[in-house]
Image (cartoon, rainbow, N blue to C red; front, top):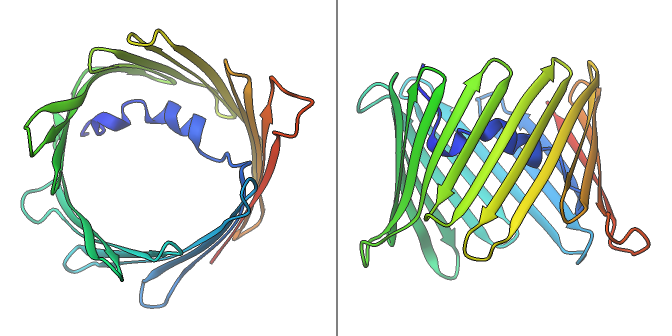
Length: 278
């Protein structure tokens, strides 16, 4: 089996810390699939802090005989993002996606060509824009994963954001660490304690500023239809969520963002996310 992309070596821990939180806004998501196979998603969100309302309309269709996929997304920022992708056409394990943003009063912007190649021994990606190239590769050896990524400016051909990542996977444990530009160190530990409980730790150190960070997170499946999760960092930012499948096609998430170092303040936020799908 092909190793993951370099950026996904620590994905299990990253997902534990990022997914299913959202006390800063209230959101409604509608998902459906038309009879011809077009997947539709409509989403609206209101910020608790500013009251601003944002929305998007997304469609996705895959032509199975050719493997060509087309995805379009319109947002209330009046930007239409289009992605056209094809898989396994050049060589087995390859895919390529052309991305472009269209702004009515400015024309086409942000052209990008994303390519990837997955083989048993390695996974490589290369994203090309008008200004830079981002390239990554990841190799696997037994339980170890080795990844490297870098951005190269097409103007100066100078690399930046060069990151080396090492991961170790064994059973229910995933450990990863990375060094970026020889100055920033990040690490994570993900542990599936049992089928119902997941736990993780993230830590970081910046050699330039001397700043350090530490965060812990956990998720507990309460029953077949619901789970709860929480995370906290050294700044005493506390995020908690409760997610429940109310019935088939109805998913409710209740989230809270708590300023643990200012419990008597009005900095706390509560958010709701309702997803209706067909």
